[in-house]
Structure formats: C-alpha cells, structure tokens
Amino acid sequence: MSAERLGIPAVAVITDRFEASARAMAEANGRADYPFAVIAHPVAGNPDEELREKAELAVSLLVPLLTRRGRE
Image (cartoon, rainbow, N blue to C red):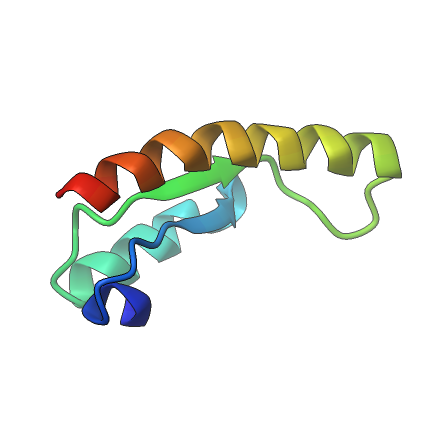
C-alpha cells in the first residue's frame, strides 16, 4: 500500500492460508478493496515444477490487476 501512496500501482501476492488475515489488514487500513493475487499454500519446500506453476498463476492474476489499478 505504501507504493500506491507514491502513485505506483501495487498488488500483493499471498497464499490462500493468509487470505483472511490479508483482507482484514487491508480493511483495517481503509483499503477493503485492495487486490490480492492468491496462490495455493505452501510455497516453501515446493519442488521447482510446482513453484513454476504457482509463479505462472501469480503472473496471470497480477497482470490484469496491475493493469486495472494503473487506470484507476
């Protein structure tokens, strides 16, 4: 959220295990509409192929979110 205060579109990447906490923090900071790219938990300890798949999913979620935020 700090980046957005500087006019830089930003989106957080989180795992599904932390989604409820992240949304609560966004709401507590007055940004209930803050976007998140949510991927499956866990990330640590994943084999390379699974990490690659999660990274590709994150990018596919991030691009439209960042593009939309850049126009807001």
